[in-house]
Image 1: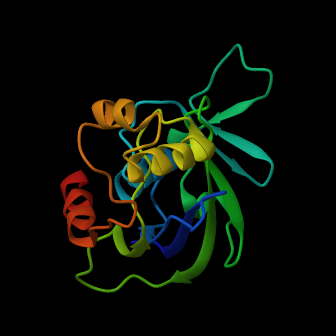
Image 2: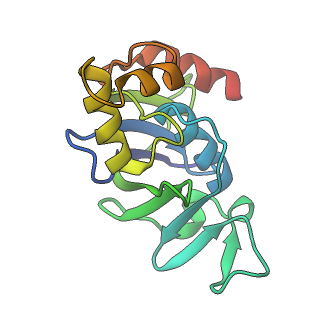
Length: 181
């Protein structure tokens, strides 16, 4: 097993911050990291994604793109020469533009018997898909909290239940990560 990367994933522009701390094997390719982020953040993997690392773009190659995109299946964390304190971007859903800052907090030796990936900690619920990015999420939260808000009934019908922006279930996330293996 290669080195283990402790990553802090923070949804940019979220206030208060929505974040997760995970341990990931350095042999994990970037597409697998995308899948891990989907699980720990709570996204549904319904949109395109990309990583921006050292001014290089990684994702699904697109021959029609105006910029070169490296195949994220072909690069793992340890190949990209990431160091502690390095930061990079993960963007999910180019329409809503959910940009995540990923900080390499530590590079560790693997612990015998430990299952990777694992989520160590996090704060706050992931916004619903297709809510309109961070700014749409703010409107969604205001409307969901206030029954007199002009969009409350529409959002309640769309979401289908009350929404708790503080919800975070570490056990549920780690169970989903174990199912990925």
